[in-house]
Image 1: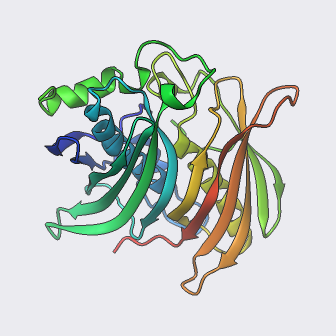
Image 2: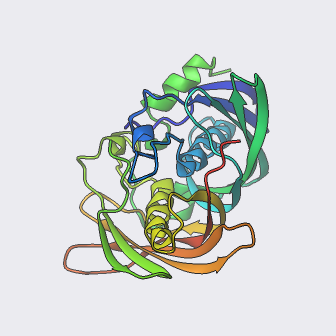
Amino acid sequence: MRWMWIDSIIAFEPKARMVAIKNVSLAEEHLHQHFAAEGSLPAQPLMPNSLILEGMAQTAGILVGSVNDFREKVVLAKVASATIDADVGPGQTIRYDARIERMDAMGAATVGTVSRFDHISNAWTDIGTIEMMFSHLDQNMQGMEFPEENFVFGENFKTILRNAGFPR
Amino acid sequence: MHFRLIDNVLEIDDARAVAIKNVTAAEEYLQDHFPGFPVLPGVFMVEAMVQAAREVLDRRGKPRFVLGGVRALRYGSFVRPGEALRVEVTVDKELPDGSVSFKGSGTVVRVGGVAADTAVSGRFTMRPVRTA
C-alpha cells in the first residue's frame, strides 16, 4: 500500500478552501480484507473510515501547507471531531471539501465535509464532517531534530499538485 | 498490504482490549509517510484502536462494526520502525442506536520496555455498516 489518499484536487481558493476527490476501486488490495468473507458473513469491500480521516488530512494539510508555499512541515496534531455516518464502497467517489478556520505561526484548524458520489444514483450525498488541527512541526517540537528537507510534501504530493496545476 | 493493524492481542474481555502494532521498515506505506522520516501514520493509530475495539465487539455479538466518529483525539510521540504502538481501548457506553463508544489510547513501546510516551489518546464510536 502506498500512502496517497486523494487522487486529484478539483477546487482551490488560496488560503481558504481546497476540494479533492478519491475514487474507491476493487483494485485496491486492502478493500478485500475490509471485509473478507468470514463464517456466515459474506465479503463486504468498504473504504476503511480511518483512511477517510487521512483523505481529509491530506486535503486540508495541502491547503494549510500552500499558505506558506510548502515551507512548513504540516502534520496532523488533533482530530477535534469527526462523524462518518455512511460507508463508501467500490465504484463510488469520495469528495473532501476542506476550509481553514484559524491559522497562525504554530499551525491551523480546519473543518471539512465528506461526500460520496454514486454512479448508480448519479448524485452526491454528504456523509460526514471532520474538524482537525495541524501543527507546524519545526515550530512545536523544540529540541527535536528533523531532516532539513520538507519530507511531509514529498514526491507524491508534488505529483498531485502538478496534476492540479500547482504552483498557481 | 494486509489491512491488519494489530499484531498481538495481549488482554481481552467484554469491555476492554490491549493490543500491539509492531512498526517495521518492511511496511511499504512508510516509504511515503514520510520519505526519509518513516513514522506510523496517525490514522493507523486510529485503525489499530478500531481493530482492537472490533475484537471486543465480536465478543459482545456485534461483528463487523466500523468507525463512526472521533472526538478530542490528540497525537503525541511519533512511532518509528523498530518501535511498537500499544493500544488500549475500553467500552464507554452502548448508545440507543446500537453503536458503542470507546475510550482509547496508545503508547510507544520499545524492546526492553523503556519509556512509554503517549502517541495518541481520544474517544471514538463504532457503529454497524451503513451503505445506504
